[in-house]
Image (tube, rainbow over all chains, first blue to last red):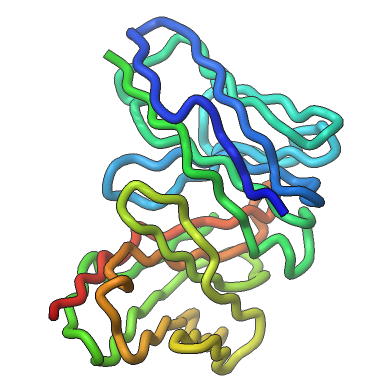
Length: 116
Length: 111
């Protein structure tokens, strides 16, 4: 059983650029969530995808957008990058979007984004 | 919305027992979870409580009191490899009933 894989692991962008981060969910998991984790802080919920539809969003502006594909993999896109977007971006998959299984997230190792 | 409070740092010696507390505020309640994250690593699931009481998983136990909006993670027989950040996370009635994480407790285990 494969876990959650994310790419790229590290990247550097400049302010105003756009970035796409990718995530392959764990086999059998149909729900993908994206989190932003600043240094020394807990993960902050960005949004969640289920059956290729966004079904929940945290307090992030519209320049944060995403996709989920039929194979449950996902992308996070961030436009007009700002310095404060520098963080670890974590993708997590779960077996279900509701019920006890929604409490058990399998995280990828993350994509470390630095915005200069 | 949801918010959680947990201590920022805890230090203990190898072989000891440590308790990491977590208090939360949430609209609706669908469970309190605990995750471990080593430096540079991914958060990994440790334990989950939906009902009051103690859940035991090996050296780790987690407790929940819904009436007090309180839970704790208990780590026994501490090992050096337990040095990590520990996050409590609550699932409430957010837009996706998503997990909301606390800021984390950095546990340092000393020899």
